[in-house]
Length: 247
Image 1 (tube, helix red, strand yellow):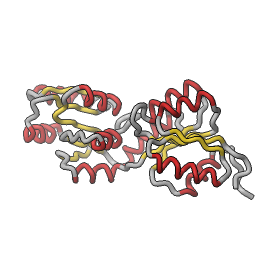
Image 2 (cartoon, rainbow, N blue to C red; image 1 turned 120 degrees about the vertical axis):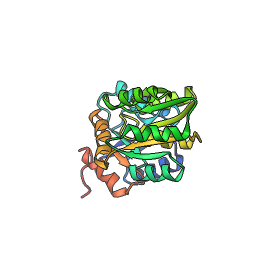
Image 3 (cartoon, rainbow, N blue to C red; image 1 turned 30 degrees about the vertical axis):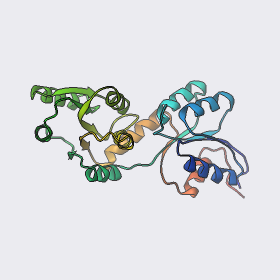
Image 4 (tube, helix red, strand yellow; image 1 turned 90 degrees about the vertical axis):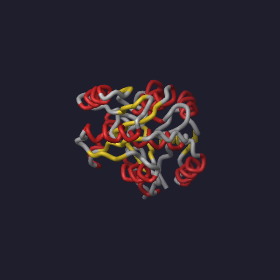
């Protein structure tokens, strides 16, 4: 058992996952609060000074990243672990299984993109989700010059918002987007049964790791991939320096 009890907040819209995680920490004699939405998490921080939070990234309403920003306004030194259940390999396999138009490695040949678009012949918007300041505008110009309507966004948040507000015929999605990455965007759309024909742009695994590092640079304590090994979770608490190892 840990010598010091921590006040822990678990935030996940998956009630089974949240409750299971709570049981794990309670077995270690920690004081655990569970929130099933980002809004509940923010309310919880208004009344309790938590030592650490474990927060799922993709949730309805306020997602984990948006909630994190709100929480940081309330408590600038909040310790938060972000939780995500998807990897690049899983996403690419899922995309292919669900009929993605193609998966292109970087550097991307714009001619291949145009060839894929010609097969679909979209009458509506081609949405490009790409934060590369050089390649994104270049691809947008090439696609528009070829006669397609096009919109460029530079983050996962913008991509999800555009899809919810406009009729998107085809999406060109870079997996390495800031904050909410392409994996989470694609998965969210699949969960909502928005089966938009998608061209996925991906680099090496190391490149995707950079997007996770950018989240750490925002002072998020760390990134955890589901499912969790209980021993790893408990070791994360020890790393905070608040929980001495059991005697």
